[in-house]
Length: 114
Length: 114
Image (tube, rainbow over all chains, first blue to last red; front, top):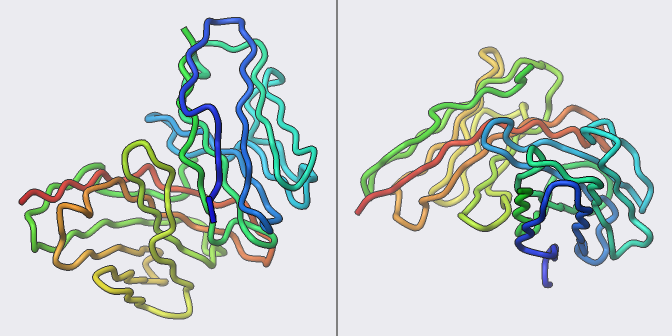
């Protein structure tokens, strides 16, 4: 199994630009999570999907953030417009069934907003 | 509000020694306590997990000790090796089959020196 695949691995952009992060979960996993990791705040849950449906997006920091899961094998996290404080590592994770037991994380996208 | 407090922030252990990382939680309803291991440039990976109905779980050189009354749990790495050098995160999950709000500690950076 290829695991959770995220792209790009690194993204450098200028403030105000749109950023789109992509994730392919493990085949057969029904739950998908987007997390953000920073030194100050650690790992924070941004949004949780189950069976492609957003269940909880209360962790999305602002309206500038949006996430979609058009099918079971693909999800995107979009930031528009981006700001320097959005700089962080963004992880996608998936799990079989419901919930966050036994999460499988991707390798993350290192985002730098200049 | 930090629901899972992890210590120490960093730890240096000599090869062959025992590494101990501690976590304390506040919510007595938590019923699943995993530890994740993260290498630089990678996403966290599930290492070992425990439920509150047992006081200890061992998998190879890794042991979780759980003290329900004190609301504390710890990770012990026996015979620590340089390859164990990584950041370790404890976490806690609320009850329920579909619970998804896994709360992570801030992490402990372990360095095992030869």
